[in-house]
Image (cartoon, rainbow over all chains, first blue to last red; front, top):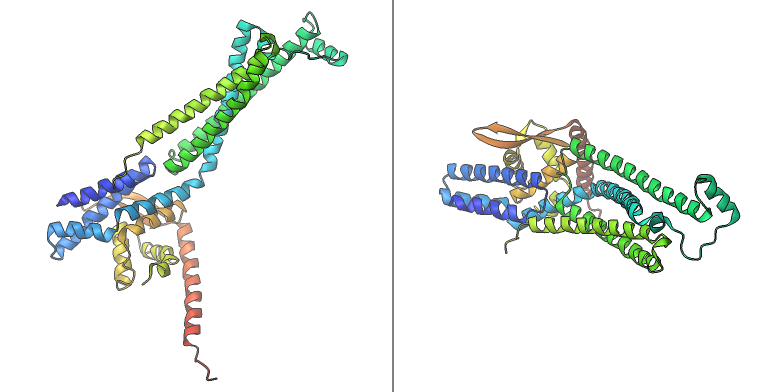
Length: 257
Length: 110
């Protein structure tokens, strides 16, 4: 009848919705408690089989016990959600940076107009024209100078975002490593922040891709490429978060009735 | 005793038991049951989430120890836990005194 304790532990393991390290600890601690309890009961005269059953009964209903562990873990990890948000911000900045790099590569093939061309009907004032030519004196005309300037801005700002994102993620990883991993963040809290991130990236893609379509259907020299690469980067990030969520969903154990 | 009555004081009682020296979960529950003459006979498993919560709050520290051929998680009070225990004891004493005074107040004849 040692099975009773093993079954209790298996049920508890299946019902826990906590991080891996915490799960191992809870199950090990519970096993130690149940074995000790059964040993003491047996030493007081209970039959070994009865002692195991009684030890489990005294420990409490496995669903209620798992629920209280899950609740405690979730409440604690809510405090850590902001840290997940820092991670999401880092990923967002890196995504923006990557879209800048993709835009730079796209410009090498399709021209700078594809990424930073002026929309149809744009009128450049004389003063702005002077400014643009001041930035890019090598340009043949005002329009070319404006495109070159906007392209520099596009790539420059996106690379700044990439550098900042890398710094944020490096800091995040360092603190996570120093706090011994993500043990304090429950899977439920992680799922919530991942869902938030997936929705945010999906929203960005849904806003930017139609803008890209709007610009590009007028021709490729209207700067629609910047929306296109940014929208695609957001879409890829959204899919990445959805994949993470799917993996989390698969790794969740089935909860027995 | 109703579980609700115990709820607000469980943390202080756990800290008090652990203040006596490093101790593992089973012994904590056993001490609670024994010293309260069984008044606090709550499901044993409910104590562990409370212990984990106290540890997350920095009031307890725990580590695996090897004893009697088994690996067990042993808890001990931190400095912060000691301060929390002193505060909890003071609050309980004030509360208990106040309740006792109210209960023992003679009923005035009208």
